[in-house]
Image (cartoon, rainbow, N blue to C red; front, top):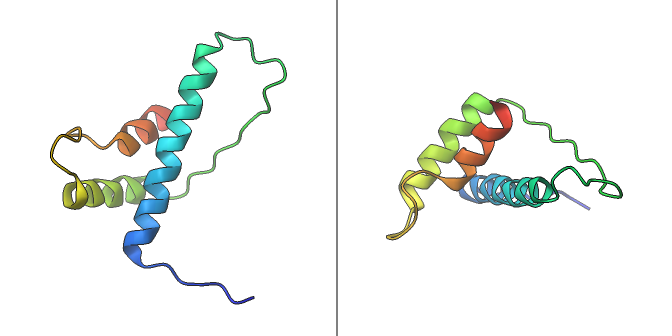
Amino acid sequence: MAATRRSPRSAHICRYDALVDLGSELERRIALDGDLDGVPRSMVVIDRADATLRHLARYWATFRQEGDPKWSPAIAVLEAVLY
């Protein structure tokens, strides 16, 4: 089966959605307050985080709707994970 090429916009949406989902999972695990028995481990690999941050910022500046937070939730999650 041939791989389909995504548009640059859809690639940004995929990254954005994955990071927002990661943030939700991190919040869920933090709420467990250390009771992680039976919770499978997760491993996250982020390549070129600096470029990803720039792309996410550009995506958010372009597609942010009225009422959305000024700062991208995906960037907030990525920074929390990295730093």
